[in-house]
Image (cartoon, rainbow, N blue to C red):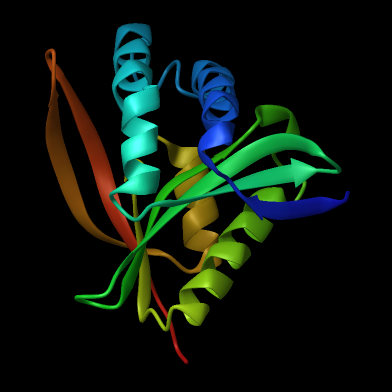
Length: 168
């Protein structure tokens, strides 16, 4: 499989939105309600929100492509105050799961963290997303906290914070 990574730009926002809708609607039923999926997609993936993250908030979006076909994406944000890298988003179409691509995405993230001289990578994952948690733990991430965040409209994000310490 010919997987490559490329930086995403503002022109990729519609593609990120399309991938998000497909991935979330195939993966999250049974973990969160369809109403919460729709709410979070509308809130987190609006054109204005993605544009603001890319232009003003320091998020770097990376498209994951098989040949030239986008199959997933990452979003990273470096935090210089504690030399950590936030893995804000990591999503892959379900038909590409169990092919080693998720691991390559995590390895790519680790390589980027090393370039930034980050001492750790952290992420948040829904506590009921057992499949993803297993993947992160196999890669070396450890659960460091439980968090519940009110996101409005009667919904919460019920997550584990997970962290990978890095050695330079």
